[in-house]
Length: 126
Image 1 (cartoon, rainbow, N blue to C red):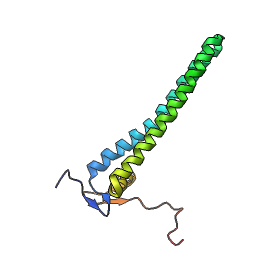
Image 2 (image 1 turned 45 degrees about the vertical axis):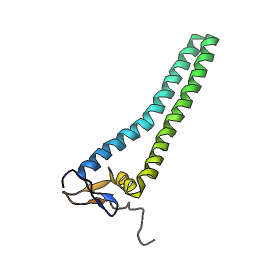
Image 3 (image 1 turned 180 degrees about the horizontal axis):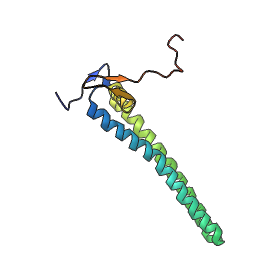
Image 4 (image 1 turned 90 degrees about the vertical axis):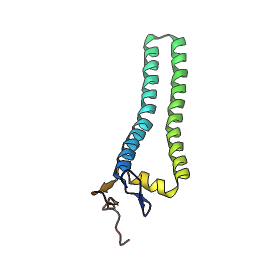
């Protein structure tokens, strides 16, 4: 039936689900990388402003804020890793294979998803 998710050897075959998961993976990756970078840039800009003003009180406050933002950036980065780990544990192997297939699989017609062949670095004879 259309719109349902079917599993074939643990890999999703629903094109719509794979498309949605591909976009979710992209957003997930962008947020995981962009949020910490933006936090660190904001802290650096604040510290730069304080240093150029020459006020010791502002420099101390900006340094403390940069430390807090660096901690928040690390926390956000680790939060995304923890979320992915928990979804892999809760979702099991079916979910993991479906998540891994999204965005890295070639979907042909309405048939099952065919994983992209391994890279040339992986010699099957080894």
